[in-house]
Every structure is written in C-alpha cells, then in structure tokens.
Image 1 (cartoon, rainbow, N blue to C red):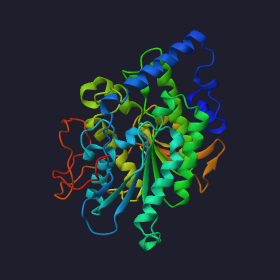
Image 2: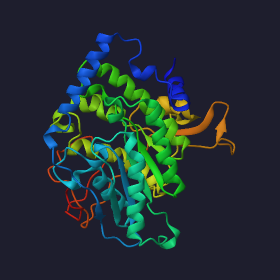
Image 3: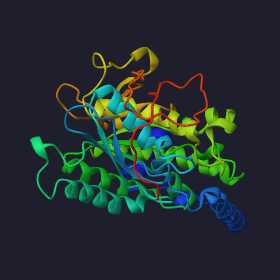
Image 4: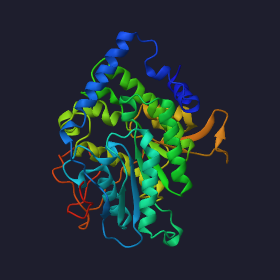
Length: 371
C-alpha cells in the first residue's frame, strides 16, 4: 500500500494496523513497551522544573498587535532552552514583528508532555485568554480573538502509543474550532523520530515509520479542516542527526536553541502567508521542484518526505474537490531575511549556523515571565 493510500486510510477510517504492533509476537511487543518506558524516563529529565514561557509582547511598532497562539506539546513550549527568547514562539514573534512593523502578542497555551488529547483544553484556554484581554468584548475592527495559532503536536502521540484514530480526529477538531472562531492555523506535523537517541532499535525503526505515517495523516485532517501544514520530519531527522551537538538539547530528544531557531525559520513563511503578510509577490509553486496542485492525500505523502513543505487547500476551476478528494497545493516557501531592528529581542548564546535561513534582530526586548 502506498504512503498516500495509508495516510488516506488513517485520516478517513483511522485504521492503523492494530495500533502499530499487530503481527508482532508477545515478546517483541514486551520489548517495545519496555524501550518506550525507558525512553520516556530519559526524555525531559535534565529540564525538570524549568519551563520557558514565550508569552508576552514583542516589538513596539504601530497598529493593532498581531496575536499568535502556541498550542501543542513541549516543542511548542520550547523545552530544552535556557531563555524564553530562544523558544519557537519568541523567534516567530520576532520575525512577525520585524516584517510587519507591528507588535506581536504571544499566548503560550502548550503543555510539556502533551498528546493530542490536550488540544481541546488548550484551544479553550487560548480563546479564553484572548477574550479576557478584550474584557469580553469583540476585538476592535472585528478582528478574530487570535490572528494565527501554531499547533505542534504528534511526537508524544507516537511515544505514548495514542492511536492514529484518536490523534488525527483530535487534531481535526482543534483546527475546526479555531477556524470557526476566525483564527488562521498553521500545523507543524509530527517530526521524524528515527534519529532520536533515547529511542533505541527496534523501537526506533517503528517510531520512524509511525511518525511519518502520522505526519501524512495529520496533513490530510488539518487541511480538510482549514489549516495549512508544514512538514517538520527531516528537521528532526538526518540534518539533526548529523549535527547532534548543535541541534539537540541535553536530553537528546528536544531541540536546542539552534534547533528551535531552524524550526521557527521554516514555519515563519507559512505564518506570513496565513496572515496575508507575504514579503514580495505571492509565491507560486515551482513545478520543476515537484511543487504544485494534487489531491490532499498524495500531497500529504509527498510533503512527509520533504521537510519544510507547506500544504494548504486549493481550488481547481473553482472547485475545492476533485475525483480523489480535496485539492491541495504544495510549496516550499522562501524564508525571508529579517531587518535588523533595535526594539526586538535576540537569542542569547545562539550558535552560529551557516545554513540558518533567518537573521535575528540584535537587541533584547520584552518577554513573558518564566514559570
């Protein structure tokens, strides 16, 4: 069965081969469960009691602040960094503030260790925080309560063996609820867990397969619900594996400040597109690079194989659906260089990365308190 067909089955019928361990003997299943337990004990251990908080305002430009919500797991929190300004929420806020000339207000609603089961609660918290900021009134200018939400979730679904049935359904429900509230949504799909040191073979090989299949299924569910997705697979895959000392933090599972900067740089162009703040003319798919329009299942499969690929809904001759389902467009967005502005934060102690596609402003600004 091809990857697109598997992803379509997961998203449409939530069938996933008995949770991923069907066909294995009792001893093999026991070994996998024991390995998963050992991995969970190691992951996050060096950071107990340390939770960076990106919540707060970034930049002091003119106009109504852009509201950015961070939803999901410890990757959305930024677990593993030493300073709140090194979190992905802060890095993306810096980019948005620099390129829009407006301040950016970050709402941090993610949870360390969260699976997709926590998304409903997190979306509720995000919308309630925004409503409280407005005093229960409609936001000025008829703007949505939050302009854009970033959802980063999936890795814990794999390591905690949450069924893809539940994982995909819960993600789709969260996206639809946000879209119903007028919030644009960008989903960073499940990373490729095949390079994570605490996850040992043979569990590593299965985790790699499960994470890739889940990422494709997440893409289908999220795009069908009205979000755009960005594949993060190989960002925590071969590139991270080749540069472990720079890209991973002390637990060898969560990214370092450099790793989060790489992740945020890949997500930033899709945030700009979601907010209709693209720099320069609208970016067209490069057909020579395999970009373009396809049905969402095949688009999801192709995106899962190429990190940094955005998938969003599309129309063909005015129709959103074709013979094989929802139309979608794949594009690898150009990452803009950021202007050097004096009123935005930098990332302390960020290692120099020759391939880092964004440059960050050079002075310290405000951020939320650390828990």
